[in-house]
Length: 272
Image 1 (spheres, helix red, strand yellow):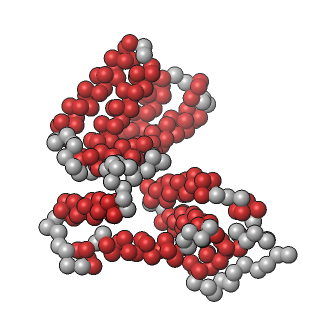
Image 2: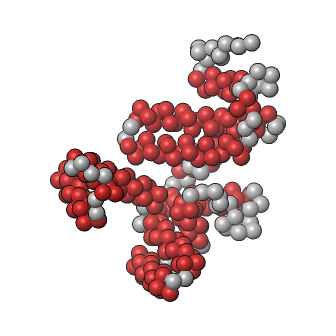
Image 3: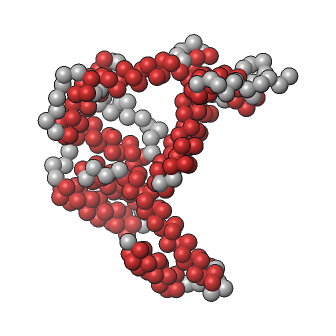
């Protein structure tokens, strides 16, 4: 028997929690929702976070509202499954982040003062280190940097942790010198035809690039998303122009497509 949805006059968050509880109801919930676990839902959580980032990149606030709702649903989904196991509930999730934000902002909610933004960042990292120590996470400074993060993001976080204790190239010039060194090693393995070693050297190059991004305070994922979008935009110009000429890319050649790429690039500069 179909039951009515939770009433619309509830607070939106309370209605969302009630909807999720209904979806997970063992008696008459949704079969798909009922068979999910933390592990099966996790990929959707990551996907929704990327869709939030995409909406921000496009400057689409209407879409951002919707994507944030999708991401919130993921939080509610995980919290509901945890509540069913007697581990914690959504309220505990909210309480934990409330406490953490107050604890990590003593310059706002207590008497601490910071002389600069850099000093504040140092204080933030010190507070996080104290929290890790309080949880018994003392085996390695790097233990709780999640393995499941995008590789570039994890590289930045690993290098930032190491930099916090002085294991860091002192200047941007030092990082650039290391980058040139790693690129040379990659070139040597490519020339030698050793693709397995080239794969490893490629990783070294990308790790140094992540270090450079951290040093410059640039998010490498954000930079790469920007370049991906730029590449797609320019290649779509190539496709559209070729279509006007009655062609497809595979009926063209590199010289023609490269010339169209330059046209797209020049048009963007004029538009700026």
